[in-house]
Length: 617
Ligand code: ADP
Ligand code: MG
Image (tube, rainbow, N blue to C red; front, side):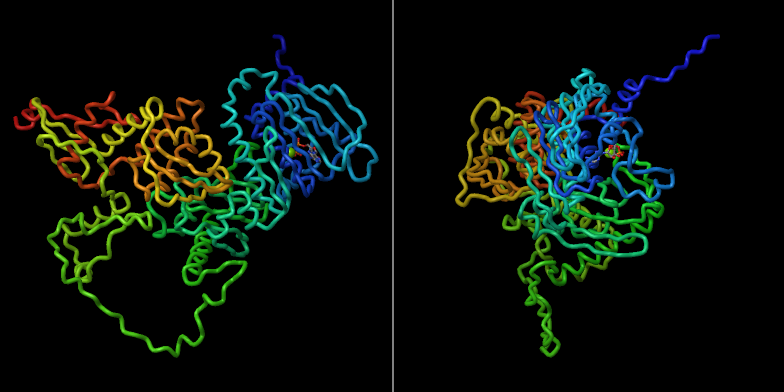
C-alpha cells in the first residue's frame, strides 16, 4: 500500500495555527501588547484603523531585536522566553509558545521595524502569507514597531465572519484595558481612526483604574491587601453602594495576567454578602501574585482560565481579605491618600457619658392597615425601602408561626422590586369588568369560555415595548422637562455605549444637555418614567447592551425598547387596583402580539370550562 502521510508545508501549518491564536483583531492586539511587555517596554502605543480590520499597529520602546532575531521571530515555535521544559514552571513572561508572530504573518500583511540599543541601524521586514517579501536595514528608534494590515486577507470566510466595527472595537478596548490594568507602570495609548481613545501615563494601580474608568471611580474604591505564604493579594473592590447592574468592572489578575475565574468570583461575591442590592455586581480589581510553580501555565493563548494548585485556600484567603477590608471601611473610611484624621474615633471618647437609648412607640400604628402601606418608595435615595418597622413588631420576630414567616419571606423577596406611584398616566374610566389580582403577580379575568390568567409584568412589558418601538420609529415622544438637570457618571466604555444609542434614547423622550468624558447631564426624560428611576434604567440598559451587542440599527432599537420596557414595567409583587388591572388587560389586547413578551415568554394562559369540568369529574 502507498504511504499517504505528509508533513504540512509551513505556511499551511501556520495558517491552521492562526485559526486558533487569532480570532479577531482584538486577539492580534493582545499578542502584540504582550510581546511589547515581555520586551520591557516603558511606553506602548496602539494605533488602529477600522476596528483593526485595515490596520493594527503597536509601537514600543522595548529591547528590540537583532537582524537574526527579527527574522527568526516569524518562525513557528521560535521564542526567546523558554529554553528547556523546566522553564515552564518558573514562567514570568506572557509569551512562551513562539506562535503568535508566525500565526499573524500567515494571515495578514505584516511589517516589522526593530532596533536594539547596541545596533546602529534597525531592521525592516515585510512578510505576507508567511512569505518574507523584503528585508532591509532601516532607520528606526530603539524598540519595535509592528504593523498588521488587512487581517484575514487570504481567508475571506474569516473576514466575513467579523462583526461590525462597533463590536470589534469594543473587543479591542476590552483587551487593551485588561493589559493596561495589569501593567500600570507602563504608559499606554490607543488611537482609533485618528481619535485618541486612551492616553494612560505610567501610574500606580489606583490611578490607572481611575484613568481608565473615569475620575469618579477613585472615591468608590476600597483597598484590599493580604500577604500569605500562598498568595499575595492587592488591589481594590468597589464600595457596595456603587455595585453595577453588569459584570463589566470585574478583574482578576494572576501574576499580571488577566484571568476569569467563576470560583474566585464567588469568593468575592460571598464576601459582600448582605451588602449588595438584588441583581447587582460588585466591581473589583484584584491582583494575585502566586509562585508560578503553583499554577498550570499551559494556558491556551486565547483562553483566560487558569488552574491553581490550592484553589480552596485561595478562596478562603480572598474572601477573608475582602471581608476585612469592607469591615474596616465601614468603621472608618480608609483612603490611601489624604486620610482625614478627624474621622478617627477621638481618644477622649471613653470619658464621655453614655446615654441610654430612647425607645419610641408609634401609637398610630394600625396592624390591620393594608400591608402595602407599610412600605414606601423613597425617591431621594433611588431605592425601594421598607420603612422602619414599628417597635412592637420586633416582639414577634422570634415567633416561629408558619403564617407570619411566610408573609415575611414574601416581603423580603419583593422588597427591592416594589414599585408604587402612578405608573398609569392615562387611566381609562371604563366600566369595571371583573378582574382581580392573584399573589400580586397575576391578573385574573373571566372569558365566556373560561378563565384568563395574565402575568402582569410580562403584559406591561409588552405594552411598553410596542409603545416605545412606535415612539422611536414613527412618532416623536413627549418628554418632561426636569427642573434641575440630572447629572450621572459613567465610565469611559459606558459613555461610548450611551453615545451610540443617544439618538434612539432621544426619540423615547430623553433630552441630553451635555455629554462629557465621564458624565451626562439629562434635562428631560420620557413622561413614562420618574426621575428617580433614570439611573437604574440607564444602567440596566448598558448592562443589556453589554450582554447582547446589537449589530445594526434595527436590533439596536429593538434591544433598547426591550430593555427600557422591562425596567419600566410594573413588577411582580406590586399591588394593582382594579383600574390599573383593567388598563393592563385592555392595552394588552390592543397590542400587535399580546401572547408573547418581547423576550418570547408566555404572557397569559387560559383555563377553559371543559378543563375545569374535567377537574370536577
Ligand atoms: P512568544 O511571545 O511566545 O515568544 P511570539 O511569536 O509572540 O512568541 O514572538 C516570538 C519572539 O519574537 C519572542 O520570543 C521575542 O523574542 C521576539 N519579539 C516579539 N515581539 C517583540 C517585541 N515587541 N520586542 C522585542 N522582541 C519581540
Ligand atoms: Mg508573544
